[in-house]
Length: 609
Image (cartoon, rainbow, N blue to C red):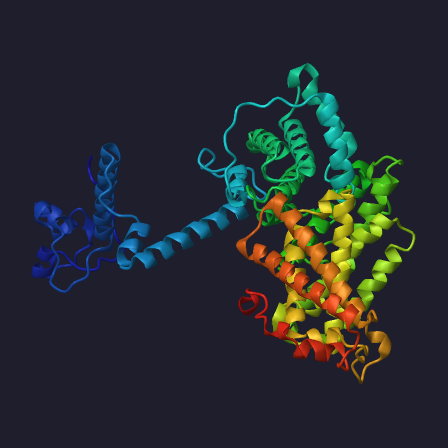
């Protein structure tokens, strides 16, 4: 192909012949006009690219040379792709080559993997695909890879139980789980059951299979007593079959995805061995926020059924997020100010049956009580880092407001509702008093408040475990809470036992109004000892029960052993107190200071917390 005739408006340098002849060179390419007229076109320096020493290369010639280099690189790349060889290392390979130590290489690889995962999550929370990576990565695979702790073992296909038994399991879930967190309505559950059981499930959708299998699995876990019984193993198999529909159910940008993840979250708090509840709920919250459903658009109010589902799912997400955040003592996923969704007056407005008055009370009461809990928790953990280390005198007003909200909500409620909300009340009181365990100093009055809250928590947990009516209140998350509460009281008994067993009630801190501080329970010495014995007994039994169902860390079993040790000590002291009432002692505190039991080293985990 002939080179096109190119000409610049002003040549950078004259050709050699024009320069020697001292004539004007027009810079025409591939040869200037003077050289062409003289028949010396082949010798023109514009064609040979020979320039005077020190002169700048022609702009057009530079572009031609650059084009030739690019053509050679393209040819080399085509040859490498054909042979499957890569002569040039990638940028990541060059980076790893510069890192000499193995630790540097591992750290760089971990950072790259972490950043890439965050990129996928941000991309796919609202989009519909992965721009060319659909075969290698999907939203469902990303969610399951983050939330899976232990892969579910592959098993043979498992048929659904009889329809009658499935309905019975559904009722267990409705009464014990969905009464507090109605992720699925009874109408939708029975609609999925109808689709799955009719015509061999020919007309059932992936969401129907997902819902029925997980509801059956959750119902079996509610009936399970240990991780080795038949119900547990059947539940794991049903959950594995449900996960086969993950690719079709977990789709980005869809409201039903949040519902499906929340249902799997409920399963995970009963089976923390295989799934991480924290990552599942965090993903559900992220999807919900990215879609923008934490706000209630004006156009949505024109569609009553859409408003019903939206408010119901949001309140479930809100309550569950606060539940797991309080249990792990972490920051809230989203603040109350960032959300703008109306709280329904009753579940009847959300499409529930009128005969579900008990469920209506449970769900609405719990959602309303989560609001003041969230407010005071966020004030402590979400405002400033210094707040955690401030004196506890700034927090009793929050405790009083929390108790006031509790009494207002449970004024006309049933006994079960009082225990359900009371469990949260006592646990939040302990967190507000001593959020960082032994890092916040308490005086005698604060020690009594913490002691009262711990005793009340143990009594409430015992009542719920005995009734076993609301099984959602006794999950692996409650195991975390109970462990924290037991650890707190053991530290109080070891470090500050004297104020607890004083006959005289501690004075309220001076300089502040009396109504700004909660009242404490006045107990005699023998009553305080009995309260400690009851607490150790209740918490030891509760932790053993929860450990059998959900497992636990080695440190948790040490707490059970410490509870047994203190139980034995205080039973002995109770016998001595009954025989020797104030014999030679001015107070019970002097007895504990003088007796040999104070030589006991205390909880083995005390120094590490």
